[in-house]
Image 1 (cartoon, one colour):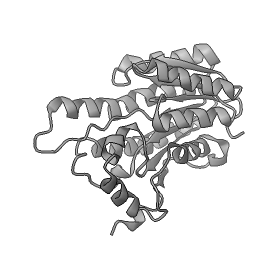
Image 2: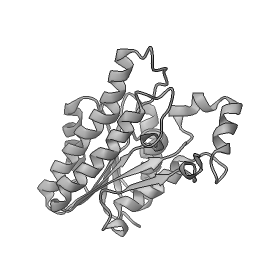
Image 3: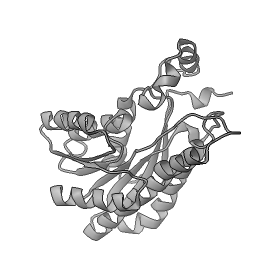
Image 4: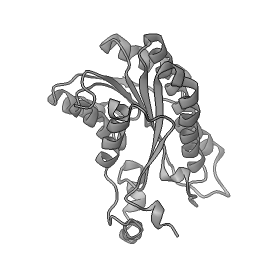
Length: 253
């Protein structure tokens, strides 16, 4: 029970890595506040899974790109559970598109969700933790894309590098308050964000062939690492970045 009696907040928690992280947090003993956006039916399924594990959950529907959503999410969690112990910044989008004709709105929306949303949400959670005076843990989901380029991801990779950098700076800014800030850099994880791309058997086989462990990642592979970073077992880790990619990055040569 790494997170027993903790209150964990997770953005983008109805699907993929966010969903797996919410369920893992409950499995580890936490009550969970999940942020989703226009995904009510699926969010209800996540709540049901959490409650089946004997823990409590609430859903807050909000667009992380809107600054006011951050305070609303944190306030709802405090109202329901009394405090915030862990915040996981996970919400993100990746609408694949070529660079030379990238629509301005696609670039802007990706930046606003992935990077601005992470900033606003992290700031709101951190303020609550500082007010509580007992420290806390913040974990941001970055990506292996923070370290490598992607032809169809010129709008996406800078946001993930930014999320990683945000956690490093927040580790410095918030350390005096006992708040630890770390990032997780997933490799290729089979989720809704890339399901269309991986539907091509040849593309999937190519991706799997670059991974020494021989398979794509699962959301649960990331959730367990997030739970570790959020827990007291990682009590002296801050400003760190954990690459969780099955060995892929080491094989990029």
